[in-house]
Amino acid sequence: MTPVDGVLSASHLVKTFRLRSGLRSTPVHAVKNVSFEVVRGRTVALVGESGSGKSTIARILAKLETPTSGQVLLDGVPTPTRGRALAEYRRRVQMVFQDPFASLNPFHSVAHHVERPVRIHHPELTSAQVAARVRDLLDRVQLSPADRFASRRPHELSGGQRQRVAIARALAPGAQYVVADEPVSMLDVSIRLGVLNLLADLQREQHLGVLYITHDLATARHFSDELLVMYRGDVVERGPADDVILRPQHPYTQALREAAADPERLGALRDEVRRSLRPLGQERSASA
Amino acid sequence: MIVERAAEPDLTVQPVLTVEDVSIRYEVDPPVDAVRGVSFTLHRGEILGLAGESGCGKTTLAYGITRLLKPPAVMTGGRVVLHGRAGRDAGGDQDDDEATTDVVALTGEELRRFRWDRVSIVFQGSMNSLNPVMTVRDQLHDVFTTHRPGMRRRVREQRCRELLELVGVDPARLASFPHQLSGGMRQRVMIAMALALDPQVMVMDEPTTALDVVVQRSIIREIMVLRERLGFAVIFITHDLPLLIEISDRIAVMRDGEVVELGTAEQIYRAPQADYTKQLLASFPSLSGTRGGFVRGREEVLGA
Image 1: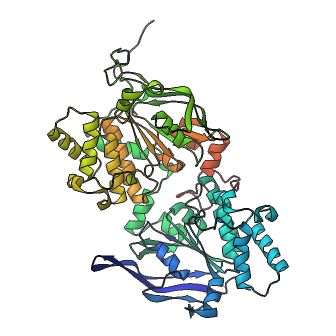
Image 2: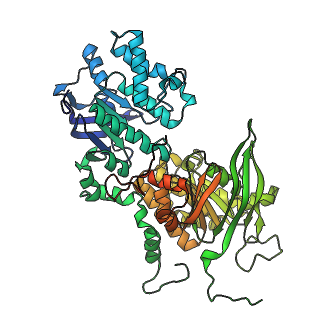
Image 3: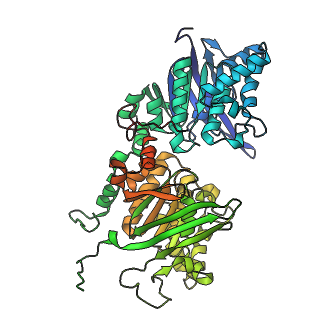
């Protein structure tokens, strides 16, 4: 398998929801004509605030939502809508959700979560082969020793460990593309990088194409090759991650960039506020 | 003893709240010591950042300071003292709103009067703690009818309009119900409510975490403007250390119920001492620095 042998592309995606109130219904244009490509072995970040349409795109790619118009193509072939072809699409394109507390079934063990997709998508494997595969997957997401984690249930795991299970589950059927919708925003800050680094390592090792959806500009910059900024259903700016963040062109990207906390601006906001409140030429020294 | 008086008292060194060796325990089985021997001093008009991850005890501490702990949480030791404004703290007249107060000892009517009047709190999800079946007007008026029973209706109404203007919400919104406002506007209304009685200290527990970054920014700027104009002190609680470094005067870093480091924002950022502070700083990728270089160094952060 060569590193770049596939591409998942979104072509002119449009999604309009109808918001009904009483007898009237108003259209909500969640996604307006969005196109991009996720190439295997590369990460594309989709950045935007809530309501910008980024999660709708994730759900369309994962076939949890049908676009109003436009299509998703895998290696140039439009996505199937039913049958074995759809199952094959789902085997190759998997999703990691935001909330690892909600996305894992509290009644089932870690092993069950990872084993089921392996069995469903690879019915030819023997039980021993499935077990070996599950162990291997848990090792790969650094839940080792695998035997210690396999029998645990979600409530016995930390948030970061749960998200690792979710990633293992996404990889289990043999995914080539992972759509990660805010995969670390529910996690504690000190373990976020661990999970993101894991995704980055897996992406390199297995030539995964990753769509990383986030509202956090800093991690988007560090963990992606290409970055798309969404605003009210439109992509307003796109380009190499560093270019977009360091030299934003669109006013909205600039606003996002300005709004993100930057410790380098230590005290700048306070000084700016003080300046703006003080009449010109009148300096108060006491509270410097 | 010679007492030297500065021509103009430096507001930043007058204490407004002293927290001494506070410990809080959850009396469950086994007991959890959520806050263990925390001490710090909050100065007038200061923004003190309280940084830490979930479970470190920062919210429990905030509840302790505002006397909002509910069983099984119990304050097992320590003192919280709210200082009166300069020159008035010796006053023995308990009627005086500005007298020095031993917060832990307050009970009954005194406690009720203390809450909100002298120390107010803005909770993380507080935009969702507005009453859905009352208008903004009724809820703001409520603060005054409870705490300033003598206030005339006309004056109350005037004050409510001023408050909304202060936090950047159109006073016409007084007639709105909470669901008619956006999340950012509801959070502003909550801040207006917290400001209503001109408190000396505002505790803000993740006040903007649930909001979008652009909205978050404008609210934080608003808080800083109001702080300059009204002179209250803020305890700002969040896990977002880069944000705290940007806006705080001093920062206390908490872990497992203890303050592991306390220093000026500059010290915490440029020369962190505690390993945990360094680890937290290393957890945030830098927005403007070199690619792959995180906020401070790139040490071993794969501790998950």
